[in-house]
Amino acid sequence: MTSIAIMNAKGGVGKSTLTMAIAETLSVWHEKSVLLIDADAQMNLSLMVMPPEKLNAARHAGQSIAGWLSSCVVTFQRSDWHGCVIGDISDVDDVTKMFIIPGDMDMTLVEREIAARGALGRARQSCRWLLDEASQVVDFVLVDCAPGISTVTECWLRECDWHLIPIKPDILAVSGMEYLRLFRQRNPGLGFASHLGVLVNMKDMRSPTDQMTHEFLSKDESLRCFPAAIPLIQHIQKAALFMKEKRSYQNKYPGDAGRALRDVTAEMIRRVSEKPPA
Ligand SMILES: Nc1ncnc2c1ncn2[C@@H]1O[C@H](COP(=O)(O)OP(=O)(O)O)[C@@H](O)[C@H]1O
Ligand SMILES: [Mg+2]
Image (cartoon, rainbow, N blue to C red; front, side):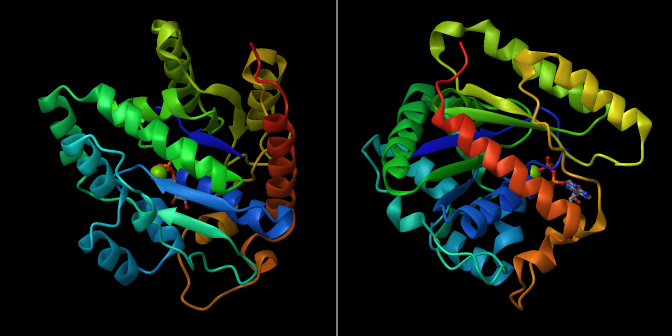
């Protein structure tokens, strides 16, 4: 159906955690199929949804986004990505139809290869093929981008249908968002994902300052700030640790955390069904 790049130029705002939590909520609550793409060489998202042995085996077999992109850049053929897709992921028992193309530390080498070969156009075209094809077979493709605007991150940002910006309610994370906005304006002719919204994460629900920041962001309509914010709580911090024993959705995201995730995903589904903002 659609593709979303999860991006903030700043690291540590919860991009990977939210990509996982949103995917699991879309799967369990909204019965949507989701393909995750771990586009960050840190591989955090991959490690959140599968055991390290499984990730290592996939990487050694070339089943990663770096392996796929590298072959596209070298051969410039419509390299098949299906073989890089790993199923049976997530430690939530009710998750179905959730898949991942894992991340790889070699992504930094692929970036160098793209630069050395002057192959940004090829890389971008390859990402477009993948996103076009994948959006026809799953409801959502979620791309967890690396922080900063590297060559490959630029490809995802320009080729995805939408981008979602998680931020922490602090000044640095807000600056990361501003940076992205300026980047987007620099070459409008090159195309860019439509802005799906700003999602406040790690909001301390008892902090008047965090509340003020959320209200301040919500006043600027162009930011499309989600009314629900994801609370700063230990459960979400712990959600990042993959558990070998499956657990229930309620156990992983209890109370306010689950409620906020369900509100946010319902709003996301509503927004992607509408015409993108101008
Ligand atoms: N809502 C939250 N409450 C508590 N901890 C969180 C929350 N969101 C993320 N974290 C923690 O913050 C850290 C950074 O999150 P991560 O998803 O890796 O950020 P990014 O991908 O933007 O670098 C991780 O330790 C994660 O567990
Ligand atoms: Mg991350």
